[in-house]
Amino acid sequence: MEKINTQNSKRRDTENKIGNDKKYKVINHNVRSSHITGGGGSQAGKYSDLVVGKKGIAALLKYEFLTSTFSGCPGALGILLRKIFYRFLFKKIGKGVVFGRNITLRHPNKIIIGDNVLIDENCMLDAKGNDNKGIEIKNGSYIGRNTILSCKDGDIILEENVNIGFNCEVQSSSHVSIGKNTLVAAYVYIIAGDHIHESEDQPVSLIQGTSKGIVIGENCWLGAKATIFDGVEIGHNVVIGASAVVNEDVAPFSVAVGIPAKVIKNKLAGQKENKQE
Image (cartoon, rainbow, N blue to C red):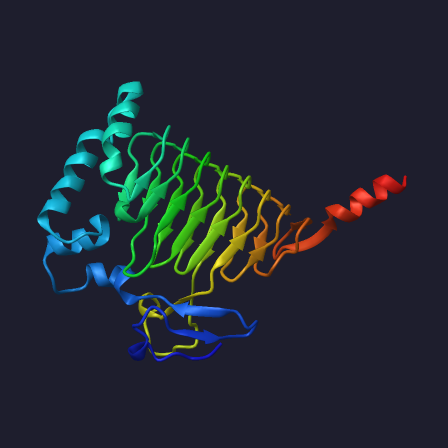
């Protein structure tokens, strides 16, 4: 991998070529934890950068009032109140959206939610970034309890009828898209980000980050505890086995299992054999 001077890589759109000819971008330092915990700036300013995503006291007060007042409201009344008032936080929100209790929202002004989406309790929707578009969850999708959708100056797109189980994490420093009708089982980790590893004099926490993105096709099934690494493209109608570690592309209609994941079957070939019999 090409070595990058961390002093000269502040621009988010810096792109280079690496081993498999997929482009990657350098992660903007302003979305890393060191920017929030470092010196300089007011506490209110840092909080707004991390959570609210808009400048000004009015945006901060609106965010604080709506989330603190309605986030923990229990039962059907809480669902109704969040349905009414949370729409003032988001960029766009559709009809029939259900928000569970204790959902953490960051940069909600960059989150689009379609019709009939259900977001269960204790989820995090984090769209933070300086130049990214944020998170889009399209019609009929479901986000399971304790699941995290996290942007670090990247984008996350869930197409129609995507079902994500509980305790999953989708992290994007460039782009993650999950095709329609895809099922993601519990404890799946989809991580569109990596680090430069050749630095000899930098602390691990300050090593430069990069991202190539992840694309997951339509009608896929990702088994429980599967891990999808940065730069991977998974075709449509793919099955990823439980606990598999996917670090290279998977062709459409494949079944891949293991660590690292290897294709053990092509579903189209199996269908042809059945027809011949």
